[in-house]
Length: 183
Image (cartoon, rainbow, N blue to C red):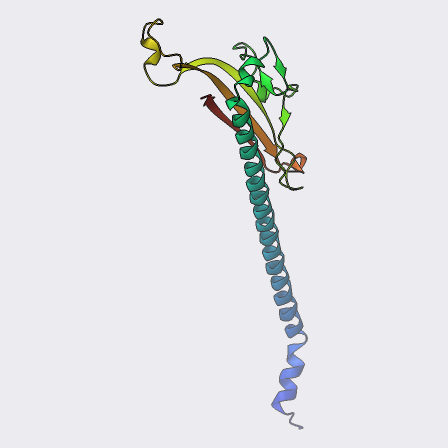
């Protein structure tokens, strides 16, 4: 009887088991790599959206400041139309109507002069005259004959908006409002 070395006997018994083990490990590593890639792509989209929102926020805030500067001009009160909007200056809002900034058909937005590049669409704003308001608490409670001429000042609501250049993809959009009493 011929004796075979132990190495040769164990090699004949394996019959491709190591190939199956290596293939399973390769499959596991591939699935792990795909999971890491998916997470990386999600994080990249989140950071791009955060950047777009930051740029849109800065553009909307700049448009809001531009609207405040326009509201500060004494000629703005004289430019308030009796109804509707004209050059970004609007009359008293109708309480029964939809808010202007929510109305998709509203075309009274005034483009802002601020340019932040091609990341966001140009910001726009409009100013709504909201009536007169007291400049300091209680000044309107004084008899009108003794009231200071500086007591009642025009009050405006300024609305500004900006959105990412590709907002149709569901990216960042910013809408800001402020109430402003002209000095």
